[in-house]
Length: 419
Image 1 (cartoon, rainbow, N blue to C red):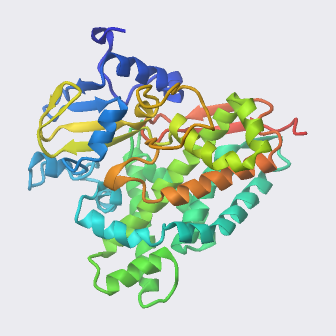
Image 2 (image 1 turned 30 degrees about the vertical axis):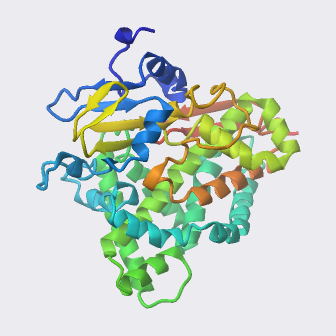
Image 3 (image 1 turned 90 degrees about the horizontal axis):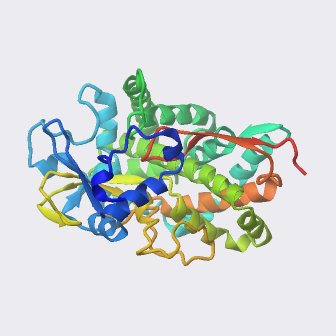
């Protein structure tokens, strides 16, 4: 399709069928040009959308592109928002400002170094038996039902239970934590917020701030081994961590891990139902599950786009990109770029699992990637092992109106014909 016939690209306002399967749309734009420029139309900075793998890799690994709109604009006052949250939502803004994903060095480096100890491969290996127990308990609760919503019954609660274990949060609080994470998500993506979306997120932020401040107070001087106690001890030992910083980090881990793993598991099941021969192969050879997770992450990643800001003038895909411009890296498009991945629209669990962008790249490469892989492998393996009819019967699926955190809000499986 000639470039001139394409409408201006945006991550909002998509048709429902395109949201559920955005890859043909990406392909049309990528084939027309690797970078598309969209004027703001409101006096703000233009947005440059990157569709090609090489351009996405360049931006995510280049320190000339960062997470702060304020730093990119050179505005040291209050005109440039540090995070994409309206100023009147103070509790929400305070929490989001302290998310690792919105920090640049040196704060980013210091906080990530602290957290890395709890997301190391050895720590995650030690967690795997507990993760397996949680997955099996959830799957057992699905048994006996003629219909089951895989999102509500498994994919959504599973990562909340896991991160709550890591943070050391009481089991009785976990349903409430998940509800708050869902409310907060309404204001942190491209999702159509509807009436009251920001207000619900603001309420959840105030409740989270109060809850985690209480948790911080209880752990001061403690000797527990959970992540929250580790952060409190680091603060008490002189690390540059405020209470707001600890609260923001806990909420970030809760919400980011919840949404991404939920979306991955639901979309993985949909992909395997569409490829019954691969589903059968994984059941027959569980050793393939780790490579299948990598390929499913490439094929349909749970995060489709990430935003950076140009800290210096740059040149991308034939465009001059002025300092202060917004740059959106489309991970979903890059992962389907035929210049990097042969037959990119084919799901191939034997594909070499290298250099896909499902976990991002650069200094903001997913902190919890090791944990996320464990959750994905164990969660998917448990579903394949314990639900023999996973690939049978019908299903109903509803996608969130969201092209950043991308996945179903409901995936209802018909289990009435289980063998």
